[in-house]
Image (cartoon, rainbow, N blue to C red; front, side, top):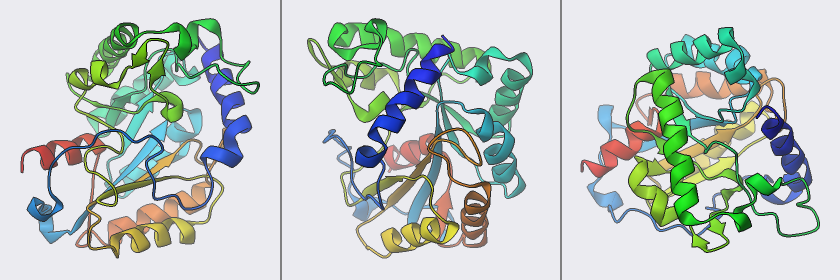
Length: 274
């Protein structure tokens, strides 16, 4: 299963110019969002907007750089893990993920095999077992359940959020999202409709650009949830430098009165309670 990470890396390189470009305040797929109204949401400590930082694929650089930085400034992140990742096949790093969960970080669901569409000439890297066209909604629900069980063994939590691999959810027999929703606390970027909820998949940008994205998004009075999604931090692929990531975390820690910075699950749960 370690080969899954290499497939993911290949896909990211192929799609770097298409899927991760500039400051995107978009939801890549038009998923149905919660019906909660932004007028009904008041966050803790008087903050007017919630911010969540997430990290995909359980990469080594996340344990080496991202987790220690978040812990230093007492900010909790969401890490969407893949069971086949290198760090989840190493006893010492598995213990590090368990410790991260104990410290309040969310271990989120990112499926088991990272299934994506195999359509198109640039998708020959997608293995048959990971092709969405060979899947069904029932199959995907079973895979998400399996990932939930795996993550439960790491953190003991029975509820967590989910982010779809490749932001794609169409199987050979229909969209799988409806089958998966009851199995997770929430789906990434879909708790509120845009522009009430926005996110940016960032890489190779400065700390200033990361901070400006937060400031610019928060300046819109309609925006209530802001997310930034990372992959590598100071290493691996689609990387953001450790320095840029640190600058963002320091900024958020300094402005806790403006932003409620927490895990995506905490934000989802809070909104659903309103």
